[in-house]
Length: 292
Figure (cartoon, rainbow, N blue to C red):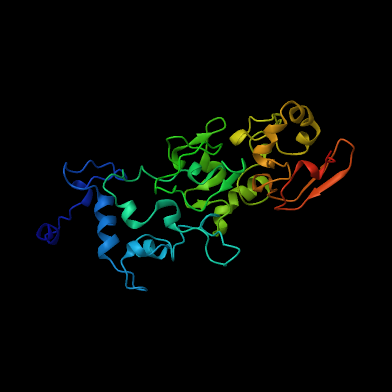
């Protein structure tokens, strides 16, 4: 191989080692490319900072030895920059979603296909009945967590998934590893231009600019219509199925992270009282209604 390469005829690794990323089938009996690379580096390559095998380094620095990130900031989305409020450290690492290097290089893993999905971390808790945002995509057995979730991509990868009338998930949430809002200002230009603030594109008027349909559960992920129009029209839906509200507003109707406002909102109630919700505030039923 070295002689062939030195003679000016480089050999593509995927000609022998199968790679779904390149659409190459490889040669039967030879490990796929991702398995060969990751399994070898997991035990044979050492971390310059600790002197230990890279498989024992459980933060993104292990991946950044080969994958772009520390300089190019490929991992720049809202999840990648999340901070643990208790320690001030980064809350999520590459391993939180992908597992250790040896797990990525496991022989039974299908490269570029066996990847984490939204529902592995965003799911309803069996204990509380409320949705959670887990910090690991894996269950206690080390497998991707199976769950039923309004954020499920099914058997598809996030980058290939669509919802709400065939709209690609990335159109509203941003691309993989660069979910809105990101640390790169240029990434956030689109959402700012469309709805006036950065972050997930969530305003109904962005697409329904002629007339906004009023619905209790036909929006993305089963969401109701957002905005003043819903304040005036949600009473009937709430009376018919109050438990429906708990998905985002919580079992106690006090609000959860799913009912947080992405921007400051000012509403008028049916009694024409003005209610102001600051950015990041979790809206609960009792913010407007008297608890009986």
